Image (cartoon, rainbow, N blue to C red; front, top):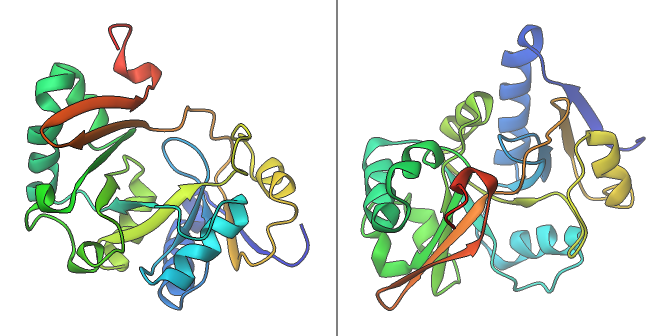
Length: 212
């Protein structure tokens, strides 16, 4: 794994990891970071070139939409509950914050998102509020948002360890920092899409329960 700066995340190094990760992200670098679901590729930027770099690492087309991670501010949490509560019911509390990405038309978000996310070049914006405490600290240092996607090539399963993630990405050339948080053995987040007044499960997750 030569060539990538790697930090180990544990309680003794938590402050260093938060500070260093935020510095790299705010300077425009790409980071591999553990989340409450799977390892993710993250960047703090909304211009087409930065987003294309994430897609290139996954072997996807440059303009493929990428979801955002957002800090758990009360207005956004409440708004996301309102958007999906009619479909998900009581399980919503387990997923926000947590393993749920909500994709909705730009207008559906109102004024609940950080301003840079409203300038994304997408007609619909996907947002997840992670339930990972250290990642929430980093989001707070980065203005409350990051762009993120799972750290695996398109069409291939996610890997649980950082070593496997980097190997699967062919050495992850172009990644400035990787944080080793141990095993991330959860499933990718559920995805709920809302458009034209219709709401549907676009990607399931075991946390949704058996009725979905």
